[in-house]
Image 1 (cartoon, rainbow, N blue to C red):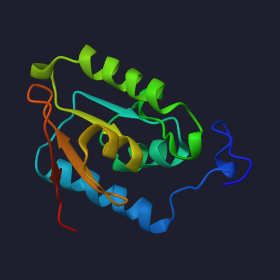
Image 2 (spheres, rainbow, N blue to C red):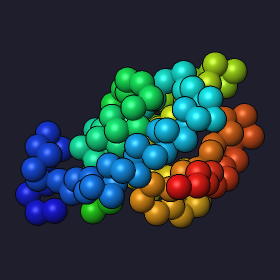
Image 3 (cartoon, rainbow, N blue to C red):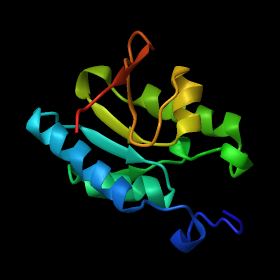
Amino acid sequence: PKNFNLNDCSKQRNLDKRGIEQSRIIGNSFKENDIVFTKIFSSFWCRCKDTAFYLNIGDYISHKGLNSFYENHVDRDQTLEELNKLINSLKSDKGPYLMVTHYVVVQAMSELSVSSGGMVVYDMISKKSKYLKISD
C-alpha cells in the first residue's frame, strides 16, 4: 500500500478473516499431526506476524531475512543474504523450523510459487524444496 510503514500495521495489507482462519486451520493441522517446531521465525510484516500468532503453536522471532522485497521495500540481495545466514546458523538435526514469509522470498529460495497460506518444505542438507499441502 501507499505510505507503507513496517512499524505501522494500518499502513500495510493485513490478514482478513479468511487469512486468520487459514492460519488457525494450519496450526491445528500441525498439532493434530504432532508437528512441533524447534523455533518459529517470521517476517517483520504484520501479516506474517499475525499468521505466526494465529497458528497458535508457539512464540516466534521476527527476522529481517524473511521480509518481502516486493516493490523494493528492502534490498533483495541483502535480505536473501540475511536469510541464508539464518539458515546456515540453524542445526539441521535440531529442527524442524518454521519460517513465515512472503511469496517473493519463497520463490527466490525454492524456485516454487505459492499462494497465500501455501507451504514449502526446505531440506537444509540437500537444499531442495517441495510443496507441503495440509487439507482443510
